[in-house]
Length: 485
Image 1: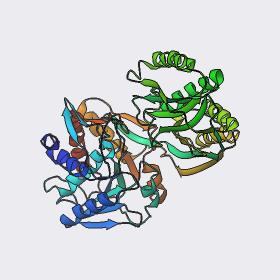
Image 2: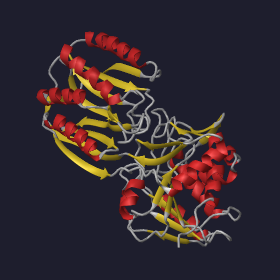
Image 3: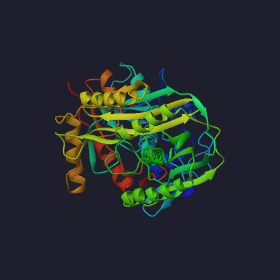
């Protein structure tokens, strides 16, 4: 029940999170949450602005005694990833997230939780509403569409903000201070094909890969999680090679920034022996991935024989291209230990009604490496007759180890916790690099509470970490440097 969430400490934070989570807020469908946030600002009698792309800015003056401090921008994104388990009945467009407490964690019932980046939004809301928290002048920046294109950050024009320091609250480890992130580009391959009448004497089967953990395609791309699209293609490739399997339809994955948890195909084949062969291969795959994917299921079921199948030549090219296309880590950073530099997520595969679509998200903290991998994928798919489009390109955020606000947070974290923070760049896409294009002089930093399993129904936020993080935020506000003359 959300009532038990509201009783968690700090109540200011969790109550605002519960308020926010009652509002549907899918990426590119943020009208309700934009209206909610504008109404919130106006009820506080604070200057509230909606820019031309839908970002909301709420400005609050400094509390007494803090007027001589630099104005800060506190920034989080309003949208959230909408994912649910296959057996969960939930309408993201009309329902609020149903939360519950599980020990030291807050979870959602069969859906994503929205802690990414809802806890950041709730933090800023709580501070804007407060009457007893000391802080400098604040420009609260709530961006839209971070999860599916970062178009809010891209559309934010220069001149709207005066703050010299930006606190981005979108990091998911409470001992980490973020100073850099990866950029990304969408790589989308499409082509048409002729549908053929299914040859006589074929038997219909559905082949389903499900029960994978999924997760964040940036932060978790190195963990060895299974990609349902790649696993399904492995099965289809084997069935084609050994039994002449013909593909009718494929529907795999969902969002570009989520590691695919489920993928399904409808196929036609001559021999029942295919089922036993596939079961054997399925057991081998499950044994390979049992440590990371203990709940994976591969289900092969008889269905009515499909009436149409793919053109044979196109099918052969498709299965080979999906086998060859890189998924996972392409290169580790040579400069920052344990940081993924460049990766790709084969996020979505659709084959239906004479059309093929393969959607990937390629990430890198090095622009040249990002385009190297993007072009590798392009070449792979073009060899099969696909047209390949690059879209949604956004830059990374280059670390500034001489940052003044970094020094403040680094020293404060050690003082409060008795150990050094982990100062790091991440492989996720934060908005700082994009915002820095129009605000190049702004000093930026990112931090946040522990959030696990983001972009999947296993998303959860740690209660004790949120308490630690909240205390950190309050101390940071007190330590913002004085204005430079």
